[in-house]
Image 1 (cartoon, one colour):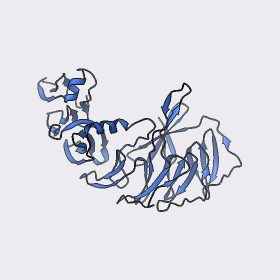
Image 2: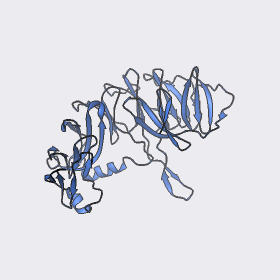
Image 3: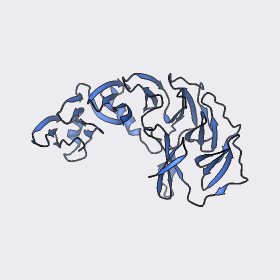
Image 4: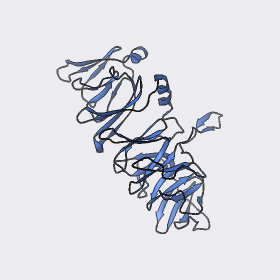
Length: 361
């Protein structure tokens, strides 16, 4: 619809039709799997419009829908399916991850010029193993990690259990880190990045006896890497007392909020700034105030000293209103701030961890 070029679907092919003359501009054969498994008119896995562009994934190729020009030849590249796509307006880039006969391949496409800027092979795996790996991504209980243009001006993305840093201009693979990323936070000087690893799928039992995945928390493992080389600064990951909820920038370092409390770390040291963690379960927000932090947990709040993490009040105060709840969804916006989605009283609140402000949605 966004291309304003009608595309008609049959069981065997797609037809692009000129919106005024109604002449057929192009024809594209449907993928073999779609021919045998889908009925015409159903939502088709082999017809997907690419956002903010004149292109679409049609059959097993990527076409310019206005004229039928082939951007990515699915037959030549032995494409089997489209597994992911993302748009990055700040660098005029559209990335499309395609599953091919030889493995997953990432294409960097210029959405203005309608041309492939670069492509890289992400792995070599069979079609069956690719399908199994793709189905595991987005599983409830696993923190989703969306690709974004990071503070070092490179594309940061996850593939399987590896973090990749890619130059968005030419597709150069700057580095890879063999770790399943759940959240990444860069230092203010862009020299380092802190990485909180994902965890395995947690299972809980409901009152009816049905098992269900738990909320998407991270693992207890935390590590810092050099932003330009991908080499470990700490040498190895450290293990915290609780599963990590979120990372938050603070005075050149960063705050780590986990299931059993919080502390502050410097990017170049495994030693926390406070001798002991501030201990509390269920922390969902921390607000900076002059010499203290206001820490929100469960239905209470506590004033905590910035100097050593000690409790300022003798006991926590109960909150008059329903507390905001951390939903475990980090998001990245064009301002390059690190945000999280909170929920309270029927509203969603988008919190910027750098300025401690929220916007109701």
